[in-house]
Every structure is written in structure tokens, then in C-alpha cells.
Length: 231
Image 1 (tube, helix red, strand yellow):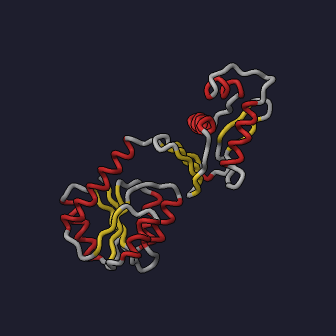
Image 2: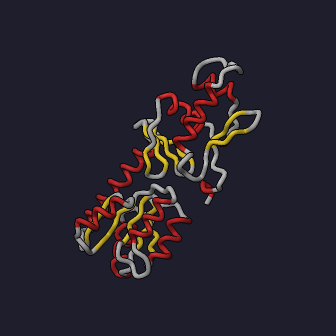
Image 3: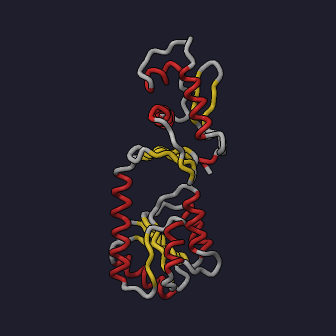
């Protein structure tokens, strides 16, 4: 398991790195926030240990930006402040756990293993379909754009699910009709166009980038044409 440790107290960082290495982890130790953020955005880790009070940039700010980029790697915050407000802030911006200094090393290992186990279960049971900042959760039957919840009818939900599963593909009206409505497409009916229009109002009208696109003479497609997914 690969761990990113961002801790500016060199002796403490070396102590944690040594202990975790002996426990079977592969540890990448960074001593400032900018190096930690660069590593976080360019490398793959199984779990992150993030000090809050860093000399150049707050650990909170690093994780906030990391989460806004759509990343879900578990993060354990380390802090010298046992402050309820800070703990709440850490969880709200995307932290998964919180450990106050000084701490017993055994507790750190247990917390890391718990985070890894939960992450593995979540990955195994993943029920989310995503594009840009749009997330559809099949298990919870919820849809969000960013932090905004979007209410859909059952048919709109099924339509969006189908388009997410085939994102980037041009979907003819006949295919949408047969797969979502289980009916043969009648060129005289505008049921598909109406449904797409209503869905577009809910997930695109007040948001950027626009995700539902009309392909003239062919049908529709769900695609992030802004390049956001590749940044």
C-alpha cells in the first residue's frame, strides 16, 4: 500500500515513515505543502496522511483543491490542535479521519488500515457514474452537479443513467426509445426530444460545462467538451 505523508516536522515525519515502512507500507514523505500537493496530483496513492499546519500552504487547502478535482483517495489529517471546529472543517472539506498530536503510532496504523478497508469496500461496491462534476449514484438514487442535488423523475434518472453509461457516444432517438422506454421509435412522436429537453434544463441550464449535446440529424450525446475531465 502506497502512502503519501505530508509532514513538515522532519523528525516526526521520519519516525512515521520508518514505522510505516516496517509495517509493510511504501511511504513517500514530503516536508512542505507545495511538494505534497504536486505529489498528490501527479502520483497514485492508496491513502494520504496530511499535516494541517504546514509552512507554505494549509493541509486543509491542499485537500480542498484535491477533492474539487474529483479525487477520492482517503485522507487522514494530523494536527497539533484538538479543536472541534477544526475537526469539523477537516471532515467538511473532504478529510476522512483526524488524529491529534501527540498520538500513539499503533493508533495511526489502525486508523490507516480502517481507511484502506473502507476505501476498498467502497471501490468494490462502487455505484457511481460520473462526468465532469455530474455524479449519479445508482445505489442511493441521487444525482448531483458539484454539491448541488438534482431531483429527477424515475424516467429522467433512467435516461441519464443510460447516457452516462454510453457517454461520448452519439445516441440515435431510436436507440434511446428502445433502451429507456422499451418501445419502437415513432418518428411522429417527440417524446424523446421532450424528455431530453427536460433533463437538459435540470442538469445543464444552471451549470457549466454543458453536458447534453444535440447532434443534428443523428440524436444526442452526453460529453464534457470543455476538457475538464482531462485537466
